[in-house]
Length: 206
Image (cartoon, rainbow, N blue to C red; front, side, top):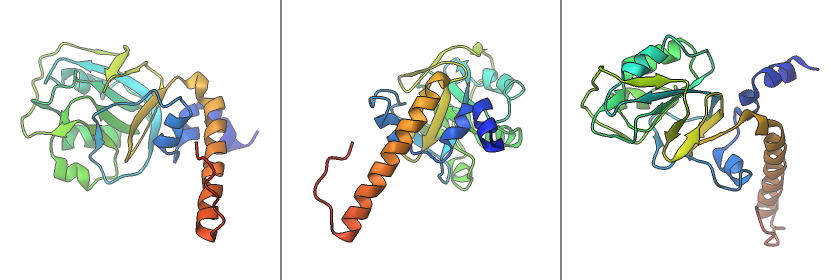
C-alpha cells in the first residue's frame, strides 16, 4: 500500500481534501448540511474529523478549554445554539487554533474581527459577525453530539467545508462515498467537456 493510501486509511478525512461539498451532498441524498453558515476566510476546502464543543449562549469558556484538548487536523465544531448576540471566536482564538494544527472552525453562532479573518486562509465558518464579545462563565461540554445549523454532528464525524457550506458524515461512510464522489466528478467533467466542444446533447446531470 502506498504511503498516501496508508495516511488516508488512518485519517479518512484526508480523502476529502479538495472535494466540493456540493458533490458530497449529492451523494448523501442531499440531506446533511449546516444551514445558515457562511465562510469568513479567503476560501478553500476544509476537511477533518469533528472535535465537538457545546457552549452556553454567548459564552466561550468551553472553546478555550477545547484549545488544549483537540488533536492536530481536527475541525472545531462549536454548537453555540445559533445565538448571534455575542461573538464566540475572533482573531486570537482563530490564531491559536491554527497554530496548534486545527483544520478549521465551524460555529453555530457569531464571530468578530471579520476583516482579519477575511484576510486569512484558515477556515472559519459562522452565521454572522458582531463586535460584542463573549462571556467566559460556562457551562459547556466537549466531545458530545452537537447540532450545527440543524445538522447533528458526532465526535469524529468527517467535516468538509468550502464556499458553498459545511457538511458532515460518519467516517464509516468514507470509502463508499469517495468512490461515488469520484464517479460523479468524472461524469460532470465529461459533461463540461461536451459543452465546451459543442457535443453536449442535454444528458441529465446528477
